Structure formats: structure tokens, C-alpha cells
Length: 335
Ligand code: KG4
Ligand code: ZN
Image (cartoon, rainbow, N blue to C red):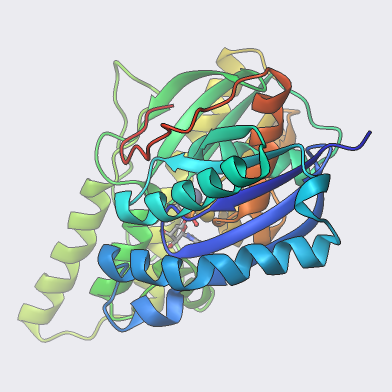
């Protein structure tokens, strides 16, 4: 019999629900983005996000069920993101999922948002299987992981300060592009030269897979201040392109190094930043030079969505790992 899972994601500013068949086939995925609401504040306002999740969740779930042509009786389980993320936002999804599970007598599967980002690749690539090395680069996280099995992960490297997406968002704000920064920097960078300025690439001798993006951010800000004080014009497209290059250079080189050191022949990229075209091109080049197979999700599954949560939830479901009605959201949930 087919396994149908309803999944709910509400960890940040997207309210999303999806129905997945047998883990990897998306029957529906509805994403209600609050970007237009948060844009005017220059970033996500947690309280506003929670309220909008409450307003949206019921219709988003109904729409996902309807689009999938499923009834609650057809479901095998309900999966939900329980962390990491904004606590108030997470609580909306967790409470809603608990309500459905209790009312319909369905097992509840609690999913780590980062596992979800990795699983987005299983949807796009039906034949992809662990082991592999995965870079997860989003607004809140930058990790290099050794994915041993569907539910077994080893952290090889992590950011010591800002996440890669966070750095994109901050620099976009500083140069006046607004929120969300990643796609705006990417668009502007196409008109600039990526070797116009040399921003730092941080390496740690004791931790070759770790990242630090606060230095590149400060360096861009100092560059802008100096130009301003001298009354000189700045070419924002050159800044965007050079900044993007500095970030993508370290994301790619550290991830490829991890693959080679671990003798793994598959490199997987995930998270909002994996939508970036320049990053993908750099990975394409590096993967082909090193004879590695490269995987990244189709754009809609790079940023937050419930389909990836349903896919990760499926593998937890198969292991019989269920949550009880006492499930709580965990804002700083670790991997
Ligand atoms: O995975 P995601 O939707 O949310 C988190 O879990 O954080 O990632 C959002 C982040 C934001 O920081 C956004 O600026 C970044 O991903 N992002 C991008 C691009 N699209 C989204 N960064 C660079 N280039 C992009 N095209
Ligand atoms: Zn995310």
C-alpha cells in the first residue's frame, strides 16, 4: 500500500504543507511566503511571522490535501518541523500537526529542519542514496556534513559566526538592496566583476572545514565607509560580485576538500544558498575537476518548503521514530 505523509513547515517566514507518496514523490506542496510582509521591515520579524502562520496554516494544509486528492484517512503519518527556527513560528506548525495526529489517530513524526534541507535532494534525485558529503547553506546554518545514512550524520564543519545566507542578507541591506538578500545580490552580481575587490577567505588551520563569514561582511562595510569618507563612487555590482565570489570560493573549496578527505564520490548541496547560480557553477567546475557527482535540489526545494520535511519524515517513519503528544518546538535544535 502507498505511504502518504502530510508534512508541515513553519520554522521561519514560509507557511508550507505538502503530501508525499512513498517518501520521494511530491503529490502536492503549497508554500505561502510572507516575504512581502517582512520586506518592509528589512528582515523577518518573529512576532509577525507567528501571527501570519496562524492566519495561513489551515488553508495551506487544506489546499495541500486537496491538490494531492487525499483525505485524512489515506494518510500514514503527519510530519512536522520542530526546530531549529523561530520558536513562535515553529509552535504554530507543531501545534497544528499535533492536533491532526490526535484527531485522526495518526503517528506524529518530528523533523529537524536541517535534515529536511538535505532530504530536498532525495526528491529532486530519486536515485540518490547516502553516503555523501553535504553542504547545507541557509539563512541560519552553514554546515558540512558526512551523511552516512538517511538518519545518520556527522558534522565535519560549521560556521563559527554568521551563516552564509545571513551574510548575503546583511550585505544586501548594507548596499541598499533589501530583503531577502541572496537573490538580489545574485542578480546584481551578474552586472559586476567578481575580481574587482579582494574580500577575505577565512581558513582555520585546526578545522579545515569550518567557515567564518563575519570577516568578509566587516571588510565590505569598511570598504564602503572608506569610499564614502573619501567621497568616491562605489560600483555596487562589483561589490556584490566580489562578495559573492568570496563566499562561494570557501563554500566550494571546503566542501570539496571534505569529499576528497573522506574518499566520497558524491557531493550534495542544500539550503537556500544552494539556489545561487554562481555557487552552482563553481561547484560544477570543482566537481568535474575532481571526478565527483554533484547534486542540488530544484530551485523550489532549495528554500523552505514542507515537501523536504515530508521526505525526511518518511525515513524517520520507516525507523518507527515517532513523537508523542508532548512534542514541543526547539528553537536551537542541534543536528
Ligand atoms: O533555507 P532557507 O529558505 O531558510 C533557512 O533555513 O534559513 O534559506 C534562506 C536563505 C536566505 O538567507 C537567503 O538570502 C538565501 O537563503 N538565499 C540565497 C539565494 N536564495 C536564497 N542566497 C544566495 N543566492 C540565492 N539565489
Ligand atoms: Zn531552511
